[in-house]
Length: 280
Image (cartoon, rainbow, N blue to C red; front, side, top):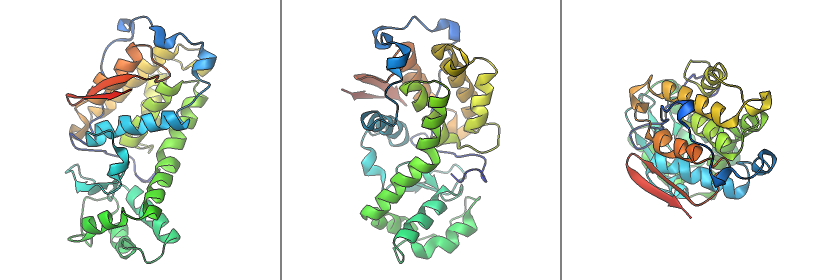
């Protein structure tokens, strides 16, 4: 996604972009279990940017985006999932229609001029903001998969993921006083919705939540606030048909929250689109 020029970031098809939040009321959330036995300070001592927690985050996102925990197998992924954003590709669902794919290929080309994707830059600039494949077909998908064998292209995907999505969401989560789960909820939201100015962007999902609850940094209760955020996220997802299946919140994020697992401690068990996943 191109932030902030493009206002939304669709991630997907029923397999790549349907994140979900369960609409359970805040009052219905049970008392925290032993997962939350650590003090708030210790719960937040490790952030989502801890290497082990970041690996969990990537697996959680991949379970929803690709129905697989093997996120590193997704560097070569590319298809048009019919959501109006052109090609969706790579480890985070870079889209030809939302600008983040263009940014990625520009970065790759700056680092490695003459790469197999460099010749598509004019076409990527033309189709930005549309679902068009003009200038990309028929060979762009095959060339993307060729590029994905290059360590430099994999590193470029990692770096753009961090710059545009991971680092901003983790920083905002920490500023709001959230633990690892809360930081992940932010990350998952920005991956799907981007951080533009439209009503369903990450910043406006957060703003909607703030109208209902205060984050810990403002003296609020973390569980109450995260329920408000997830409720706002569900609302945003339901504004678009491509995101209307909210199971990646219903049967994943909300499950961890109900268990009081604010630090995403393993083992983790969840479902997305009916498929079961486990991290031991």
